[in-house]
Amino acid sequence: MTSVAFIFARGGSKGLPGKNIKPLCGKPLLHYAIDVAKQVPAIQQTFVSTDSDDIAHCALAGGASVIARPAELASDTAPEWAAWQHAIRYVQQHYGNFNTFVSLPATSPLRIADDVQAAIKQLHQSNADLCLAVTPANRNPYFNMVTRSANDQVQLVSSLPDGIHRRQDAPAVFDITTVVYAARPEFILQQSQLFDGVITSIEVPKQRAVDIDDIYDFMLAEAILKVEQNAE
Image 1 (spheres, one colour):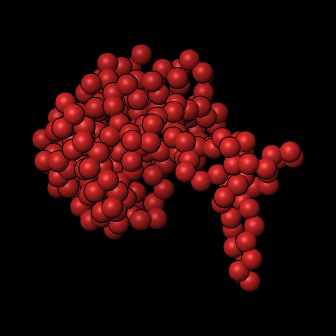
Image 2 (tube, rainbow, N blue to C red):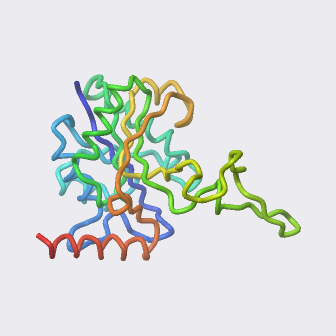
C-alpha cells in the first residue's frame, strides 16, 4: 500500500494572516502536520501544495516536498477539491501512482499519528471512497439549532423524530473536522466534491479536533499544547 500525504497551505489567510507558518509553542504551525506525517508508517512521502514562497521555504525546512500551486487554485473562491486534483496529478506525473491520498490540513496541529493511521485503515477496510474525521457536535440540529426567516421567526433545522422530547434522546450528530482526510486518488480525480461518493469516518476527541481559523482558535490550541507539555 502506498500512501502520500498532502498539506494544502495558501499564503492568503484572512482570518489569521500568516497562520500556516505562525509559531505555535515555538514551532511553525505547518511543521506539526509534516511531523505527524513522518510518524505514520503507511505514508511514504509528504508534499505541501502552496502559492507562497515563505510557506514553501518552511515546508522544505520541515522535510516536505513542495508543489507549486497555480494562482487560480489559491484564491479565496477556488475550491480546495481542485487543488487536491492538481496535487494528485503532479505526483502521478513526477513520482508515479499511489493508492491512498491523505490530506493533513495545517490548521489541525493537535492530531496524532494514530488518527491518521486509523483513517487510512478505515478507508480500505470499509471499501469507501473517502474517510474523514468527525467529533461530537456541540449543537444538535434536532434540538437546539434553528434557522431565522426574513421576519425573524425561528424554526428547528431538523424536526425531532416522533416520541423524542429530550436532547439526550435526539440522534447523535457530529462535526466534520480537518484532522485528516484519506481517499482513493481516482475518486478525487473523477468526482467534483466530497459527498459525491461513499464516505466513512473515524471519530476523534474534541481536544484533538481544534481547527485554527482565527486568533482565538490559535490561543486555544496553544493552551492545550502547553497543558500537554507540562504533563509530560
